[in-house]
Length: 215
Image (tube, rainbow, N blue to C red; front, top):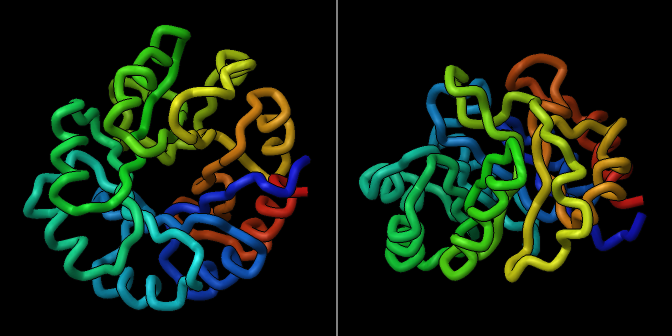
């Protein structure tokens, strides 16, 4: 597997896990600001964690249907490099967020079938990157972080969208290599796949995932 694979470790709440991710070569660290998530982190704690992220590793705010007031609080309290929008935002809303905060935006696209991939082309002019994951069930308590995977064959041969993209959803240290080979992904994102319980990361699993993705 090529070493240039970029890894995003998401939903971190503890310093030891931030350090473990950075030491093994994570390219992105994600902080989850969705209160209903077991990975939710308070602003003051996120600010502390952001301060120990090494230079060159992007700090990403994971948000769900956040209005300007909430994004103002997040960006004022935590030094961030990117915003991840995870709530069915419109083209106009993505453009507004980029203009207001001056930060690159990752737009999450939920996929269940081939038709869902059209959203990637639709948002290509406004989003800076895409995170492609399984579309959650309609009655799901959260829009992501459910450990669900979609049919990776839908992405086979689709390496050349206009913007960079990450593969997410149901990835683990055991299957991330297969996922990369099957989809051609150059970047991968993991949260629940490196946990021993919902919201409880494990440093050994973090290291194992990054090593499996990049070796």
